[in-house]
Each structure stands twice: as C-alpha cells, then as structure tokens.
Length: 102
Image (tube, rainbow, N blue to C red; front, side, top):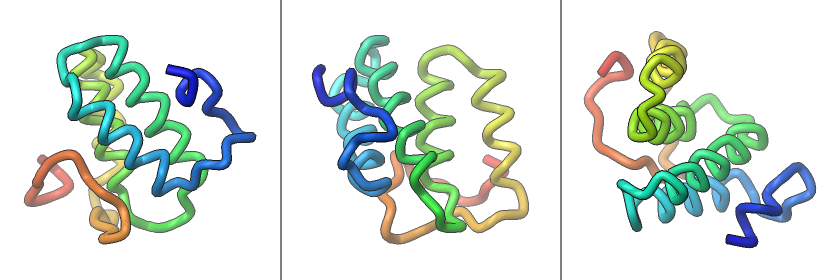
C-alpha cells in the first residue's frame, strides 16, 4: 500500500486522517498481519502529530499491537491511559471501552 509505505514526517495527513486510516486498515481485515502492521504504522504516525490530551490514538495502537501478538508492548502502552483523559471526540476509536484500565 503506497500511502502506508510513504507515511513519514513529510506526509500531508493530519493526526485525525492518519488515525482514520489506521481504523480502516484495522477493521477491514483484522486478522491479516500485513494489514495490521500497516494500521500500526498509521497509528504511530498519528501519535507523533497529535498534541491533544485524549488517548484514543494510543488506545487504537495498543489494540493493534495486542492483535499482532505484541501483548507486552500493548500492556505497557495501556499503562499510559491510567489517570489520563481517554476520550477525544474528534478522534475515532476502534472499540467501546468503559475505563482506561480495561
């Protein structure tokens, strides 16, 4: 996928757009490792651009890492949610959640 292969600091995508791309990639074929790796890259890119307090992008990244079998990295990222604002309504999330400590 060309857009993912070229996703770096020069990308014209905003944090919101990169997150949306990651969501689409994650949801379209959630068991395909290549697709999940592309979603991970999109979420990581969104994370570098996002300056808000919401943790939605990190939540999305943690869900993707867990799906890829990288549970320790996902758990470490989830610890960042504790005690911090989770929901930013301007950023789409992958799943419903009740609390940061899921």
